[in-house]
Image (cartoon, rainbow, N blue to C red):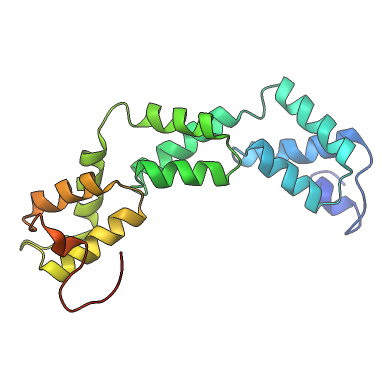
Amino acid sequence: MLGTPLAALLPRGALYTRNVDAYVLALGWLARRELTEKQIRQRLTRRGVEPDTIDDAVARLKAERAIDDARVAGAFARTAVRLKGRGPMRLERDLQMLGIERGAAKAAVKDILADTDEKTLARQALARRWRRAEKPEPADAARLFRALMRQGFGPSAVRAALTSLGAPDDDTLDHPSGTDEPV
């Protein structure tokens, strides 16, 4: 059946026993989007592919440079910083969750942030969250502080961004009055 995906031709739960099947399946996924080696291995395992077959398919994909974790890390980092406004700490953590090793994740973050500093990115992320003309009240500033920290920005970058909006640079960012919520 021409045009039918390989997975549809095999019964559900059937083991892929040929190297070509696993390789072609993974190549199809990679044609749609960049995936890490870990993601390919997980998907093939869920499909019931035998471990030796997975190893062979991954080795072939690596030899052909179809799988490149550094390339995936760079693409993910660019998207996360430019479109989602992620900070360096969250970005590094997200890359590691994708299966990118720590050193490659740090290198990707460093390359992406070479053009601009963290404080500028924090100001841009804050501008997306606070579109009002007036300066934030202490409770709003504390809420924004926590939100930017969750986005992966460091405390000094978040404080600088909030101070540029006119928020006070004091302990009210960490513990706003009237709340007992820990940071």
